Image 1 (cartoon, rainbow, N blue to C red):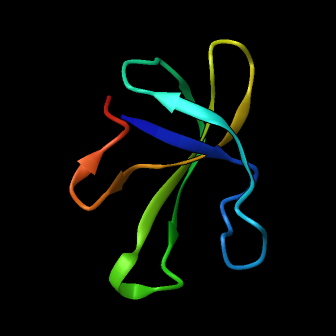
Image 2: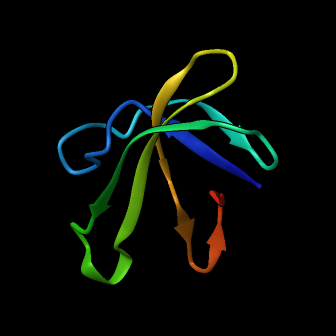
Image 3: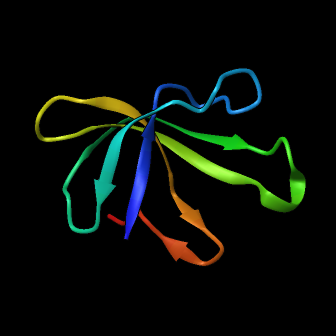
Length: 72
């Protein structure tokens, strides 16, 4: 399972550009958030800003339709 690392937490006002993919089992540091992206209330998502082990930072979704991408 993978999760797109995005430039911004705001998918309404940006293109949702994906910088890279976050793969299952990758340990990251959370540096900001949570932010609730609820521009479509039936699809509200929590987003967190993370830094990967190689220094890439961006926003990722916590879960999608019951599949969780982040856990402590």
